Length: 250
Image (cartoon, rainbow, N blue to C red):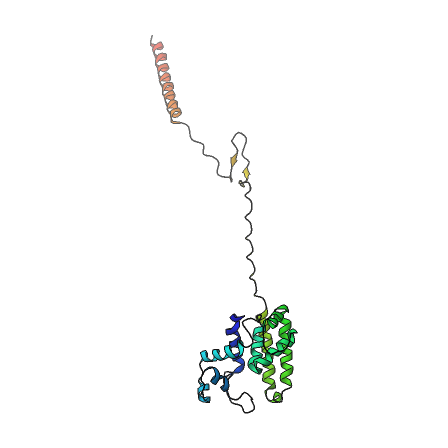
């Protein structure tokens, strides 16, 4: 899908590196994978190698989108397959990448991706298409006369493309649903403190054992009555003695 272009381009640029002008490379002078011919075609018609060396990120994205991504209809291909075909196109040309995709999906190899190729790519498991396409791509590279020079780098690149494309094709991981909270235990009867046995005659007490209940002293009125009774007894005793004494006199 087109949303993968920025991610796919970032991955491609890791493989393409920076400036290169190796005489053994049929692509000639390149900067970040952009050839001088494509730079002149999409950015500056009379560009020199010095101009190519100073290519901006925006110019790089313009060339890759127009010459490679749009050419293989990357916006319409399934996730992962879009990147695998895109990187193949950058490395070996859009026409070859398209024909290999068509061979993998069993449609006519006309070198142009249309509804039939897109439909066939969507109808098959993405992982199967990616594996078969990368296998075919590697076999093609191994037949090239420059394999001895670039074979190790190409092999590493195809291995990385395969792994990254498979990651892109995997469905997004659905975060695990939050586990429901443990239900609160149903309210039960209120637990009462243990009962304490008390001597017979006192009301049962509820709660932990405590000091014996306070027993109030003798009421004040009782104390007052006792004092009066004592006074009367003393008065009676005194009167009795007086009476006995009087009887002795008379």
